Length: 140
Image: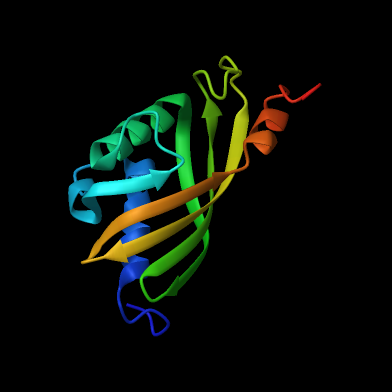
């Protein structure tokens, strides 16, 4: 725990992102509440199983994926995260077929913690920046 976050919520949220680097989704059920809600909803479905499916999808689309947390702000039951994911596009991403290009995806997430688990998350991603990197943004 840090001095700025005596609740331990920052550490909890940092563990939420580890499966993106490792592929190990076993801890997800202990990190997320069974009714975890995320906005926008995940294509892989709701709750912890939706996050597991999303992790598998992202790791499949972005080979050699690494996620770096750049900033964390924790206050009370809320934790804000600024991050970047980097990898080589191996599969379709945002409607763009595999390009083999390196891509950096910047995102900001906001999490609400209750009872030692993440119960809600809000995700904002720079899709336009990704499309620019894939040279698909022309005319957008």
